[in-house]
Amino acid sequence: MAVRHRVCAACRQPDRCEQHHRGQRTPPVRHSKRAAMLPLPTVSGKLLRDAAIYLAATLVLGAAANVAPGRHLAWWGKGFEPPQVGSDFVFIDAGSADALRASLPRVVFLDTRAAADVAASRVPGALAIAYTDLARQLRRPLLERLRAADAVIIYGGSDEVDVEQLLAQELRRRGLAPPHVLVGGFAAWLAGGLPVESAR
Image (cartoon, rainbow, N blue to C red; front, side):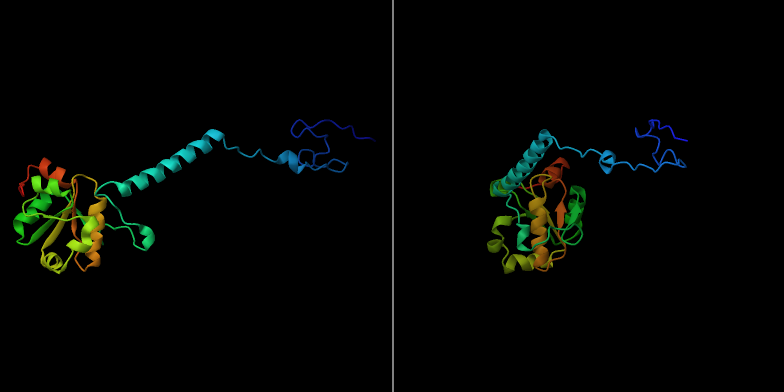
């Protein structure tokens, strides 16, 4: 007796489909692999354009950070590791830094701001130092003073601490204990109403 074939509602094949009609006498018909393939996702031109713009902006901003006056950064391609908190430096807030200054006899503050800013107002006794001029400034007398200090505290003008971290790392390479980096810089010191002096 002939078997009447109907169209399977699930797979759109005659009822010889082995998945939905097991046990039929007629040989099963396997589905085409092409029919089972899912469509590949497409990337829109807008997404590619946005990614290209983002990459270009990152490169431009990175280059600008290295040419800005007083903010020259190290090039990690020379084999140096980025500064690490704990091993290269320790963060300290303005109140704790002032407490160290008042309680220990040999606390050295290093001011990385522009020379004119340091001369106008600074932490009492702070020494001006430029990261871009370390070869000239980090001579034996200053290094000996820093090594003998109870604590070395580095600060800049604001909460940007990239240069201060790099300076701390360089001092670590010269054999010093991890210096402190002042959180918020000189702006935080002023905001706390802490003492200042003028070098003029």
